[in-house]
Structures are given as structure tokens and as C-alpha cells.
Image (cartoon, rainbow, N blue to C red; front, top):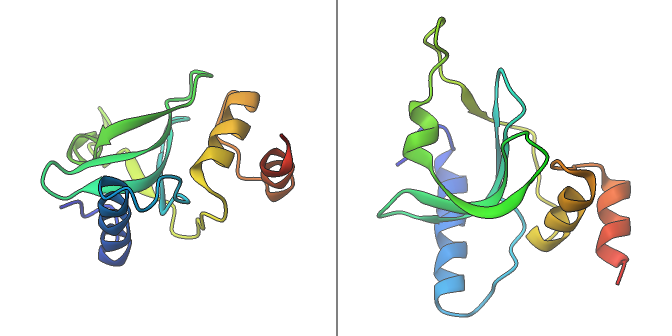
Length: 128
């Protein structure tokens, strides 16, 4: 399992994935935010398959095209800075997912990047 993400958040992500598999829920709020220390990549993740260590969420590689996708936490954890040899991806410890993933997706598609501003997310969430 990933050491990037605290165990309590891993457990929530696994629970969310089980709810989706059992058709009990499908639009969870992001549980964790990962970001590149030296780049623009951001991942807002809500679900995790504990067997494959594959997470689901809003993936923004910093190229203006954020999308819902799957990502390997093992792969993200293995990315190191070429010269400094330190991990490139880290967890944002103060992130709190307040809205369903669909709201973050709408805002990101509109802005071309992941958006966390409450005013923007609220307006996107109430727009039809």
C-alpha cells in the first residue's frame, strides 16, 4: 500500500471503491490531494483498489486537460527528481474534499486545471 497517503485516508478510499462496486454510490468527494513538488500535476483521488493499488479520481498533469482517470499509486510513489533523487509526488495534508467529484471535474474542465476555490466550486455545483 502507499506510504504517501495516511492509512485512515486509504481506508476511506477503499470503502468508497467498494460502494461504487456495489452500486451504492458513484460521486464521492475527493479524499486526498496529491501533487508534484516540482511541477503542475495534481491528483484528487476518491477511490482505491487495495489489490492493484490503482486509485480513481481527477487527474491533472498540468497540460490543460484534467480528466477523470485511474492512476497507480505505486507508480506515483516511484517518481523521483532526476538530480535530487527525492520523491516528486506528495500528499497535501490540509486538503479537504468538500464537493462531489463531478463538481471538481466541471470546474477543472472550465478552468483547464484543478480548482479548489470555494466560490468557484459552489457556483459550478449550483449551475445547471
